Structure formats: structure tokens, C-alpha cells
Image (cartoon, rainbow, N blue to C red; front, side):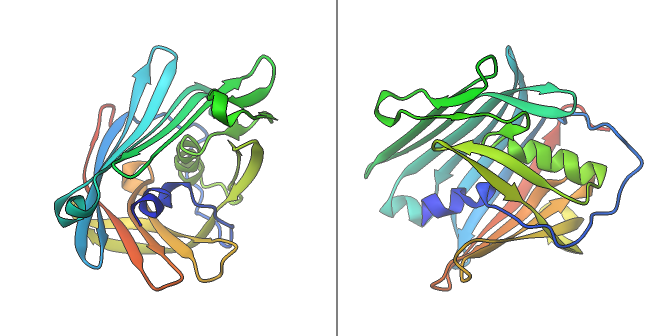
Length: 243
């Protein structure tokens, strides 16, 4: 269950409606720290912190997640996901991607290097060797969310991303469903609601992004075929370079 919760951020979408365009042609990266609670069956099961910071190689986007409360009695999980990337011509250019999941039951580790000179992305782990040819707009499973923030800010009607993962280039697309105002820990928040439908028609997700927060997600809701629903809710956010 917990692993599925943190896969919410890397779900695929399909475009159905347009986002209203805004009067801008540039997107400035907003350095931030956002905290979230994750709930299942109306019980808080984990916390997550997402940060975008400057890095010697450019920028680093991270998500750190931990089980809490009663959930921690059954399993203690820590998940770290990070993307180091450069920002060039309004485009993410990933350099390194890492995913680590540590628990008392098992460990998972993914490490990807992006070689733009040779135009390939490849696994940096000897027991998981693969490589894939890159396209000019290729991103990783985490940094594509920066592109999502950019595209929603610019009001792009067609939103799709080419993601390098496990020796393949996968197409991620977005479906904008509606505008909704939510009651959040930050107060009433205007959002754009997005939808994801995977290959399994009974597994789907909704994501609510706030224009006032550079289109950060303030709520994510994931539905499983068995009826389970996992919800991620924003608790706080701080921008280093607010408008």
C-alpha cells in the first residue's frame, strides 16, 4: 500500500480540456518546501516533504516520505526520490535521478544518469544495467512535475512528457477536468483538477494543482481496484523566491 501511495506523483494523464492561458511566456523556477500528510481509511499513515533547491549542478528536486503513527507499528518505510537537473530554455534537462525505498522487509534502489553528450540515459547500478536513447525533451519520473508546473502556468493546451524509465521512453500526458476550490490546511484554495486513467480501468487518480502556488499539487487522490483510496493533502508550503 505505502509504495503505491508514493507512486501517485508519477502517474500518467491524458488531455481532455484546455487550461486558460495566462499573459506570460516565461516560467521562473520557484524554490520551495512543501509538507504533506498521506491518509488511508481516514487515518494518517505517512508524511512527505517535497523541496526544490539550487544545487552545484543546477537544481535538485526531492521528495522524502516516512510512515507515521499506527502505520509505523506494522512497517517502517522511508522513501527518498530525487532529481538533479539543469534549467535551459524553459526546459528541464535531467542529469541524475535516484529512488531509494528502505524498510525492514525489503529495499529498492534506482539510479539513472543522463548523458546528453551521447544522448543516452542509463542505469548506474551494475545489477540493473540498461540504457535508452534520449529525445531532446526527455525528463525523469520526478522532474517532469516541474514541466507540469511550467505548462499549467503558461496555459498550454496540450501537455505531454517523454520520461526515461527502465530502459524505455514512456509518454506521460495530462487530462485537465475542472476548476475547483478546496478547503485545505492553507485555507480555501482555488485549483485545477486533473485526472489519470491507467490501463486498468478500475485504477485511477485525481490531482488538484493550485495556480496561487505555482501549480503545486495541494491534494492527490488515488483509487485502487479493490476500492481503497489513498489521499495526499498539503499541510504547509514556503517559497524562497515568492512573486
